[in-house]
Image (cartoon, rainbow, N blue to C red; front, side):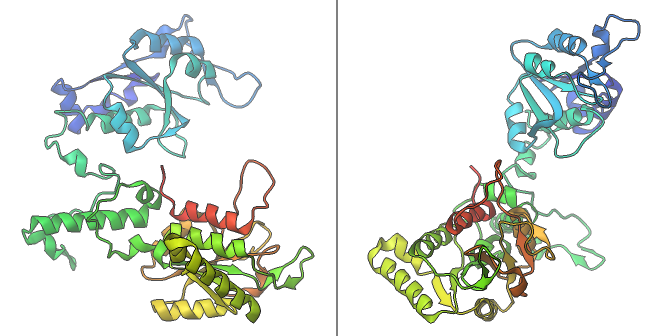
Length: 427
C-alpha cells in the first residue's frame, strides 16, 4: 500500500514515520510513504502557496493552482484523495478499516486559515478530521492516518490478531492490560488472569471492555455490536433499567406563570408507557395530587393491559400513579438503596438556572459513574415544571433544539426524542 502526503512541511511527516511499527513496515517494503510539496508547483521566485481571502478576514488561504497541481501529479484513478481539515468527518476505526482496503491514499494537508474551497470541489474525494479541535496544519492528522491504516495491512503487525483486540477493533474500548510485577504499590493483578482458564479470561476481558466502554464512551457503547453471551451483571451496562421517568401534573405553571395542577390524558399514559418499554426503563410514574386523576391513570393502564395485546400490556404494566414527586423518590430510594439522581427537563433556558445543564450523553456518563444509583427524569405538562417548587432537582437536561426557533413539542413527543438520545442505538 502507498501513502502520499501533500504538504509544504515534509519535515514534519517523514521523521515521525521512520520508527516503530510503521518505520519497520516502510523499511521492509510492506508499505510506502512519500511526500510531495505544493511549493514545487509554483511559478514565482518566492514559491508562493497562499494569498489573502476574498471577502476579507484574518490570515491567508492556500491557493488552488499549486495544491491541485501537486495532487494531480501523484493521483491515479485508483487513488483515494483525502483532505485533512477540521470541517471533515470525524476519524473513527470504521473509516480506518475502509481506508485500509485502498491501494493508494493521497493525504492533503492544509495550512494557514485553510484551503481554497475549489481544491476540495475539484481534487478531493473526502474530508476527514481528527476531532473537534484545531491544529496548525494537517500533517499530524496525516501521520495519524498512516499509522492507523498501516496497522491493518497484512505484514505490518507481528501478531495479526493484535489489531482485532485493540480498542475499537470490536467496536469497544480495549480491556485493561497487566504485566509483571504482580503487586505494584498495593495494586494487585486480577486473580483470574493468572488462573490459566482461557474461557474465563475471555469472558472477563469482554466484560471489562463492555464496562469501560459504557462508562467512558456511552456513544460508542450504544453502537457496539452485542454478543448473545455478553455478561449482564455489570451495573454500568444497565443505566436504562434503573432509569425512571415521571410525568408531573403538579407543581406546573400555566401560561401566566401561576402554579397549577394539570389534567392527564389517555394518550400521555399510553404513548409514554410504550416509549418506556421500548428503551427498557425501570418505570413510568404519573404524579398528580388529585386522587380521581390517579384512579383514572390506573384505569387507563388497566384497560390497555386487558385489551391492548401482550406488547401493550407489558408497556402499561410500568405505569404507577402517585401524589407527589417525593413519593417517587422515596419508593426508588427504598428499592435501590440509594436516592435517585433527579433530573428535570424544560423547553426554556430561563428555567432552573441555578442547576448544572447536561446533554444526554453527559447525563448517561455521570450516572454510569454511580453504579446502582437510580436516575429519575421529570417531564412537565402544561407550560412546564414550576422550577422554584422542585428542590429535589439536581441537573437539567439541555432543551431539545432544532434548526427553527419553534419549540412546542407535545410532552409525549419530547419524551420519545430524549429517550432516544439517551438510550437509542445508533444506526
